[in-house]
Image (cartoon, rainbow, N blue to C red):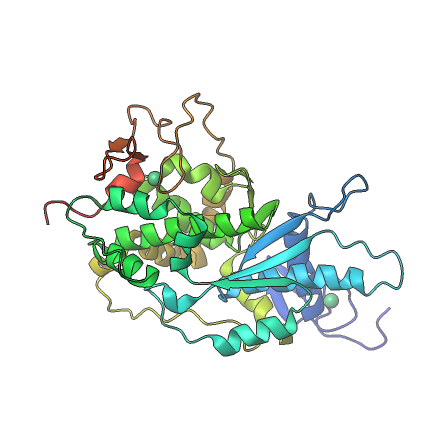
Amino acid sequence: MPTKELSNPCMECKDVEATLDIRKRQLCSDCYKRFLAYKIIRRTDGYRFKKNQSTRPKLLLPLSLGVSSSVLLHVLDSQIQRQLAKPIGAKVPFDLLVFVIEPSTIATSDNLHQQNYDLVLERFSTHAHTRLSIHDIFDYIPDMKEVMLEYAGSQFVDDSSKSNKDRLAAFRNSITTATSQTDLDYVLLTRLIVAVAQKNECEAIVWGDSDTRLAAKALAGVSKGRGASMTWQVSDGMSPWGIRFEFPLRDLYKTELEQYESLCQELSGVVIPDPPLPDNVLTKNLSIDELMMRYVQTQGAKYPGVMANVARTANKLQPSSSDDSITCSLCGGLIGNVKGNTGVTVTSQSGGNQGSKFCYGCIRSRPDPTR
Ligand SMILES: [Zn+2]
Ligand SMILES: [Zn+2]
């Protein structure tokens, strides 16, 4: 029973004043955090250290230092810390490998984030941490250079005397439109993250995509001709690389995650805020991904249920049962699972191998040979 009269008691604990509104519930900040954490943890429940296992399952958490992945890290870390704090019988469910891609090596960002990263290492020191640059993809996926050369086509000249960093930059500069560049960045990021997860024998990758982001990804994916790979890009399940993809934030809107972040002392100084998009930016200069993210954010604020429905419906997609298991050399998506689309074979210029096959989505982002 509350000891003093409260004007607006928290609907959960009823002990303190409610200060926050979430989904028509008025909660105090502790109950708000618990509510959000529960929605996340129940989605990683399947990963547990079982008696018949010799090692704990390991999950890779790609951390962009944005609000969503930082909140995911905070929630999973708190779950593990609660177990470690038990004097006896601690049941740590899984190990985390926190993976950061140096933002300054991704063209769209030039954020200096060393201080933010140092805070992550200091405050989340229980877990293993790795940081790489995007061009390290050439070390992790040795045939990537060859695939890129085939993909870029004859007008692209590669200079093997240059560093990995410069070679990747030249490749990206050969792509003309913002949509195609963002699209390929995402493909390369995914490939590198998967390669790191494989090398570290992770069972799954836990992505920090909110409901808002998943809805934007689903809509953008379809308009970019990547409908075939939507199953593993937005729904929980097996990826083409034999590692599970999980999206534990799928029930949460970005605004709810921002609210959670504001309540966590441990995240202060960690999260890099999204750069504000000027209102007068020409939409033709935005990629489809950026456009969709803007659309979902503005419309989601007005009609949250509609956007939640997009993400929920996408999560029900089933992978193709097609026997044709040929995958795209670049993005790893299935090639032959869209009716009438058998992909495109590009013969290696060096003539050394039989040529790579690329899916429809990747071919659409290819450098324009008529340029
Ligand atoms: Zn409460
Ligand atoms: Zn592809």
